[in-house]
Image (cartoon, rainbow, N blue to C red; front, side):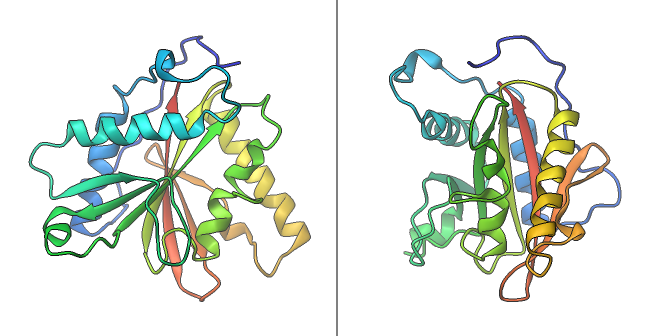
Length: 213
């Protein structure tokens, strides 16, 4: 059941010591600014559908594209990649798309956060594990920055910060070669970030945007 109770939303901020390339910084500002006013239209979601997350993502992609003004990028829902990875949303540079290159420069994975969901821990690991796919270099392949958008359906951001880091701790116990304490989310200037070593020994920074539904 999706909670309709209002919760005071904590807005991420890029102020402080966090440093990003100019384009990535622009993307972060765009997402955090426009995500505030995004609302799910539940009337357009099939109530018989047991997996409503793709409908959330489809609406979010359309919404982000509608918010674009003079930005140089665009959003693509379920961005198909040649390595068979399909992040929920990929981002491309408009100019390169017009030139016939459709490679993403920023991948976004999206996950529902609801304590009643059986596989809610797949925000971190599992068959469709969000963070795990980035570590496996499936999502964000060869990228240094990407994001996860969490749809908070109940509880609070502080609750989910502790819960997600608890799931990571459990994975460290099972496999301390693949997982480490460095994978945990940290909060800097109200922004949630995590840094991960991938299977190719390169690193990726994930910005976590949480939207209360």
